[in-house]
Image 1 (tube, helix red, strand yellow):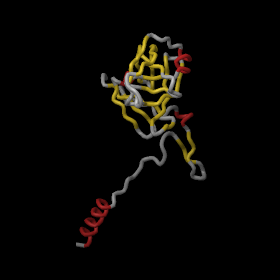
Image 2: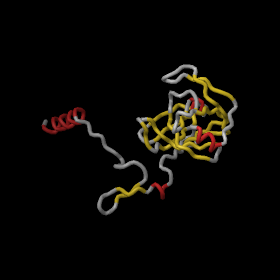
Image 3: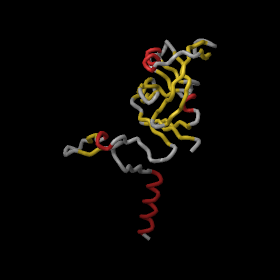
Image 4: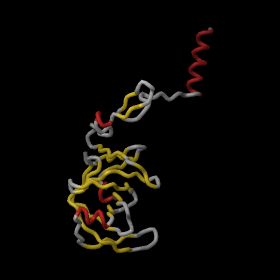
Length: 177
């Protein structure tokens, strides 16, 4: 009789006070030195955010600005630029400096509603490709905004992806795969 009561008490304790176990103390590729401190080995292990799952692309979050993730974005397979992932932006926006660096030529204008004004006209051009974490869009219209110091990666880039923003990575899940 004593043994079944012990088992019941133990099971009840687990359901009232659940314990979350972790397979690994720290994120990424690391080792623990003789003092018990983690040593980052990402340089040896490669990019720990690379996924082997087809159709899922991961871009590491470098930092956040006002809570918005900032990732590296590659344009035309040549230039890498830090961009904010803005799921509310209908288009990808570049600062004039980055547009000039990429050689974007104005092809027309783009009308947008901003928080402070309606139907604002912005210069617009085009880039051959935009890549973030392996997710790619080709022949993309980009809007040039003189008010920006950092670009915004918008819906015209990730419209074919389901976007999942995690603590340290943005995942792009391809709906076509």
